[in-house]
Amino acid sequence: MAKTFLLIAAISGLMAVAIGAFGAHGLKARLTEDLMAVYQTGVQYHFYHTLALMLVGTLALQMPMPLLNWSGCLFIVGMIIFSGSLYLLALTGIKWLGAITPLGGVAMIAGWLSLAVAVYKGME
Image (cartoon, rainbow, N blue to C red; front, side, top):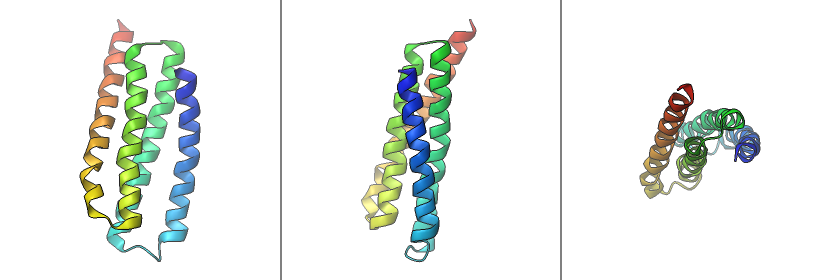
């Protein structure tokens, strides 16, 4: 899973840069200030969790553990649901998408918790 996480992180980083640039240059004049802030929040968390996934992949190369696999998978799911719902909300204006966003946030939090426990257990 470690190499898979690293590959997904590399692709996710590429996508985060492209999506961020598209927002900054292609959407700035089209979105309201509020929707642009929603979009930027999606990009911000997309980047943070891409880096977190890279960390998980790197750690998993050194100390393969099921908790690291959980962490990586939860970060991926969290990015898709959290950032994806914010991107769609900003682009479509469909308000109910905001109700899905917290599910992605919970996945991200669970990913960080899994990472913390994995690192703690790896220190024993």
